[in-house]
Length: 84
Image 1 (tube, rainbow, N blue to C red):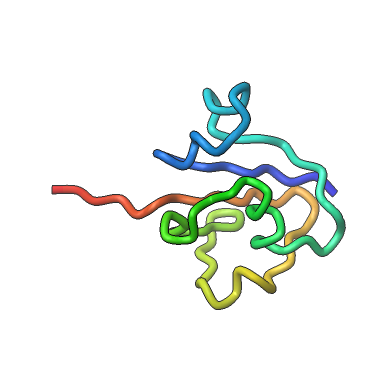
Image 2 (image 1 turned 30 degrees about the vertical axis):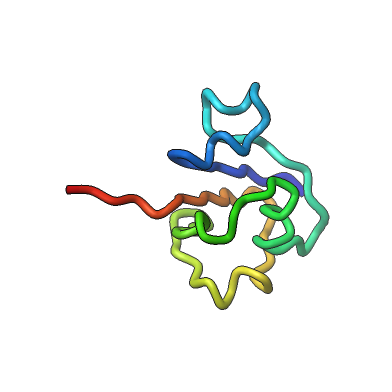
């Protein structure tokens, strides 16, 4: 199944170089792949995976290892961001 995987801010460095300009990559993943399974190959440091959204809806940390993605989903991950 096809999904879109987006990384924001400093996390874009974990995408393949050709995908960093758009901060996203189209992926072919197995049916029933979870958020954690999709993110794992990118080597994202756990402490930098702060805000996780699927189709714009927040996914709490407790659900990320078991939440299965569906065809056409957009998975977006943001690091902690401080402002002032």
